[in-house]
Image 1 (cartoon, protein in one colour):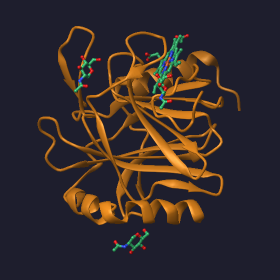
Image 2 (image 1 turned 135 degrees about the horizontal axis):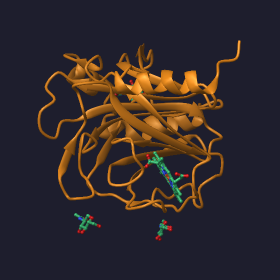
Image 3 (image 1 turned 180 degrees about the vertical axis):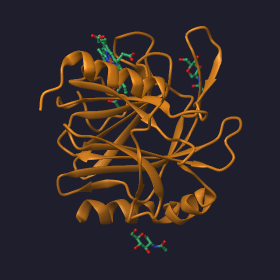
Length: 225
Ligand code: HEM
Ligand SMILES: *[C@@H]1O[C@H](CO)[C@@H](O)[C@H](O)[C@H]1NC(C)=O
Ligand SMILES: *[C@@H]1O[C@H](CO)[C@@H](O)[C@H](O)[C@H]1NC(C)=O
Ligand SMILES: *[C@@H]1O[C@H](CO)[C@@H](O)[C@H](O)[C@H]1NC(C)=O
C-alpha cells in the first residue's frame, strides 16, 4: 500500500514532536555492553550509545559504531547537526579502525577537534567485511554551540542525533587527520538515552580496557585474525 506523501509527512512530524525513540536495546556479545542502538536500513550501519547512571557535568559515554568496512567513512554528530558539536568519525585501514575527533564550523570539511578523547576498547577492529569501533568518549556529552554557550545531551526526551557516511575512501586512511569528501548519506535518529544508562558502566569499561602492555599484542592478534 502506498501512503500519500502528506500522511507520511504528518507521521514523521508526530514522531519528532513526541520524540519517539528510534533506538532499541542491544547487547554486544563481544564486550557485554548493553547499548541503545540505531541501524540505518539502507547501509546496515549501527550507531550505539551507553551512558553511566550519573549524567551530570562532563560525563563519559560508551559508543560503538558497526558497519560495512568498505565504506569510506562513518560519522556521528552529537547535537544532531553538522556544525558546532563533536563529530566522531571512523573508517577502516586494513584490519584496524582509525577514529578521528572533528568539529565543523559550517558545511565544509570538519577540523580536527581536541576537546574529545577516545579510549579504544575491546570490540574494535575489522573482521571479514565488518568494521566495529568501541570506545569510551570523554567530551562527547558536552560542547559549545554557535554562540559559545555550553550544551549537553538532552536526557529529558529522546535526543536527536545525526549520522553521515560516505562510500568514498578518505584521502590518507592511515592518518586520523586525513581530509575526506562530503557524505553520500545523512540522517537523524532519536536516541533513548535514559534507557542507555546503566550501573554497569564502569565495570564495562574496566572489563573491556585493553591493557597498555598488551595493546600491541591485541592489535597484532586482530590484524592476524
Ligand atoms: C568534507 C566533509 C563534509 C562536507 C563538505 C559537508 C557538507 C555538507 C553540506 C553542504 C550540507 C548541507 C546539505 C544540504 O542541506 O543540502 C551538509 C549537511 C549535513 N552534514 Fe555535512 N559535510 C561534511 C562532513 C560531515 C560530517 C563528518 C558529518 C557528521 C559526522 C556531517 C553531518 C551533516 C549533517 C547532520 C547535515 C544535515 C544538516 C544539519 O543537520 O546540520 N557532515 N554537509
Ligand atoms: C585545541 O584547539 C583549539 C582550537 O583550534 C586551540 O586554540 C587550542 O590551542 C588547542 N588546544 C590544545 C591543547 O591543543
Ligand atoms: C595528516 O593529514 C593532515 C591533513 O591533510 C596533514 O596536515 C598531516 O600532515 C598528515 N599527517 C601525516 C603524518 O601525514
Ligand atoms: C592480551 O590480549 C589477548 C587478545 O585480546 C587476550 O586473549 C589475552 O588474554 C590478553 N592478555 C592479558 C595478560 O591481558
